[in-house]
Amino acid sequence: MSESTHRRTGSPATPKPDDAERRATAARIVGALIDALDATLSCRRSALELSVLTLASGGHLLLEDVPGIGKTTLARALARAIRGSVARIQFTPDMLPSDVTGVSIFNQQLQEFTFHRGPLFAQIVLADEINRANPKTQAAMLEAMEERRVTVDGTTYELPRPFIVIATQNPVEMEGTYPLPEAQLDRFMCRLSLGYPDQQTEARMLMAPSGRDPLAPLKPVCSARDLAAITATAARIHVAPAVASYAVALLNATRTSTRTRLGASPRAGLALLAMSRMRALVNGQAAVYAGDVRAMAPHVLTHRVVFSDPSVASGPLERQQETLELILSDVPAPHRA
Image (cartoon, rainbow, N blue to C red; front, side, top):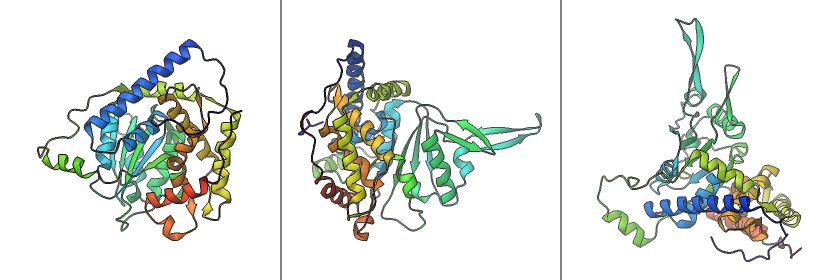
């Protein structure tokens, strides 16, 4: 991660030694996750960093790109690197909510209904082509992603912790798809486009032995419990009032700009600070700086904003981020408190 170019703002209280030790341990694990993925996959390191920061922050990740880029491979790699229960859902238009949440089946011997859990009851859920799910199934996913629980036949079932959804969607093939509503997009902490590999990387991919599992060398780096501990450690990182006010100013800029029809929600602000805290953790900081917030803003806010220009709203992620950058560039960074 690059160092912040903004002035450091706010003075955190003197951290306890055990807090510093926990932060160092968490940063080491997150760094090891990024290095393990970088050694295995042919993706841009910046994309891997954002993916790991999202999962370590306890957020859901949306991977959007053209076919064949490696979205599903990255999702599988993230699940393998984090030792936990994993389930994969290949969404189709005819899929029912019960196909993902589970179903109650009448037990003849017991003379009662028994609930059979669906794939959502895993700690890491790979949701392939999520925009092919019909609105009813998307609504079931919405409850699971936000509430970390599902309701079947009037009974509520808690999902395991951590519960993380890594979803993929193809922005090119729109036939037979149901665009994700704003409410569901808002549940994803980060939306990411992998992009094409550089020519040297692609040449190495072509020369690799065919039929070989690219994830075979990847070993688990941490457990799901470790990931939950990292999330809790990052949540304790100090945020000065001036930095929080700067985050609010960025959010407000998306709401008042003529370039947008719908700005970022308060939930987006919580996600922005969560990602900023995790970035600060990885950089060995005891506090969040304005530069952390500004660096994470395009990745956290772009998919939560509805742009006024139809060509931007329906365009690629890169163009939407460029437009958002124009909006955010008018917000001055705070000076040292």
